[in-house]
Structure formats: structure tokens, C-alpha cells
Length: 234
Image (cartoon, rainbow, N blue to C red; front, side, top):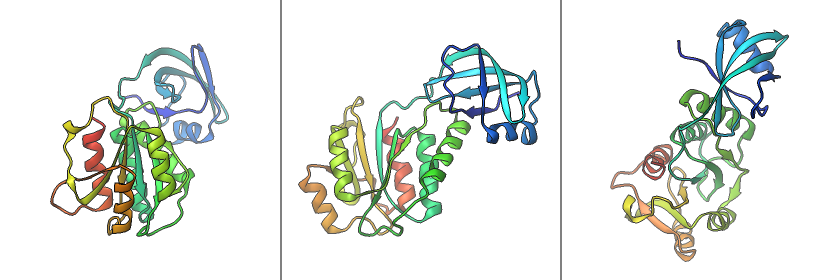
């Protein structure tokens, strides 16, 4: 039987026993997947390790578990990628967070650009979506979801964090994966529906960013995120 995976906020470390004080996990284990004392589950704490534990018992919705096995989780991104994603409609941005997490992006920074359709996001909900994507995909590290930035501040942050910064746009040069070192930490900017404005493209060029396209077809913003990350992360 495939073991259910859960992210916990407690740090396990080298403990032999752990108390998981999460009503959400407790309710899911007891009422939804119906795990009983003696059953095993997998937990992870964002340390890069995951732990196979056996449920000893419940104290209301607190779960008491004995740690059976600690292993390094090898489902790790090959490259650290900062995704600067222009804000799009709520359901589409949530989809971007979910798929970006599954693909292994390490940082997600929402950006307000000239053609952004929304100006705000529910960051707590985005973090929950990211956690659920980690639980589902087998990943044991959760990407950092930053506060919303305007484009000027996003460009400044990207250049301070990564040696390579790429803005994807239909008028850019064709993206060639081999152009960039496999070890390079990369920032990737994806525009909104309607794309970047000419003024924004000029900003990218003046700041020294690489402007690249993903092919002749015009992609939706969320599709462009998946297409770019599939090449950058792996």
C-alpha cells in the first residue's frame, strides 16, 4: 500500500517519537483516510529528509508517532530557480503555484506588471496549495512564496539573488538551454496575459537581462511557466 505523505511544521531531527499538533492532519488521518494506531505514514518537515513513522495513538487531533526510518529525499531540483510570475487571474495563478511546485521551482515571486489582471493574492492559500503539491509529488522541500513586488523591485531582487536573469517574451531570441550553465542559479520572468509592454522589455534590456522566447507559438501565461520551468529546472 502506498503510504500517505504529510508536511508537518514540527522539526523531527533525530527524534524517536514525534507529536504532530495539527488538527488538519489529525482530522484527515482519522476521518478521511482512516489511519489507525499501528498504521504507517510518511512525514516531512522541509529539511530535505522524510520520515516513515508508525501511528501510536491520537490525543484528540494530535497524532503521536514513533519514527521508524529517516531517509534523504532525492526528489530535488537540479537547479535553483526563482520564478518571477506576473499576476494573472486567481485560479490561473494558483495553477502556476501548483505546477511550479511539482516541477521543482525553489522560489515563487508574484509580480505586478503593467498588464496584470489582478493586484492582490491570498498568500496563505498559495502556500497551502504549494504544500499539497509537495505532498502529492513526493517532493520534501517547499518553495518559498514571497510577497508581491512591483516590476522594478522584482528586477532588483533577481539581480541580487542570481547570476542569470531571463525574461521570456515572444520577441526575444530563441531560448537555448545549453546557453546557460547547468549549475547557474536562474531567475525567470514570465509575463501576464497580453505579455510584457514595450516599456517593460526596454527595462529588461537596460538592466542586462537576457530576453528569450520559447518558440513561435503564443503561449498563455500559465503554459509559458510550465514550458520554461521544464527546461530550466531539469
